Figure 1 (tube, helix red, strand yellow):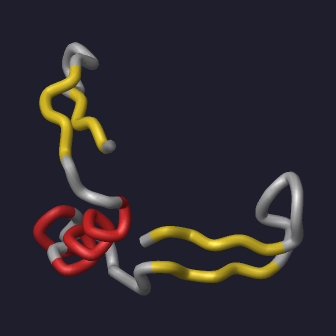
Figure 2 (figure 1 turned 90 degrees about the horizontal axis):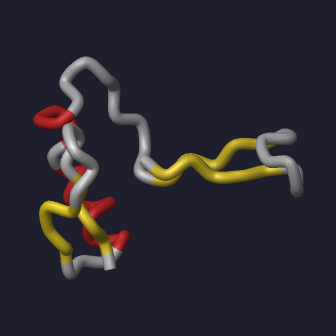
Length: 62
């Protein structure tokens, strides 16, 4: 269950009945509307090297 919070008072505004995958797809498809100053590269981008305290690789969502 995903909860949307107010940035001014940190109270729950709405509970969204969508999966993380659905929200990821929606944000990816509407990237320029949300973040026009940033370049969309890939929805899930794998990185090599010590990017986590445990393990040697990782993934960046969106």
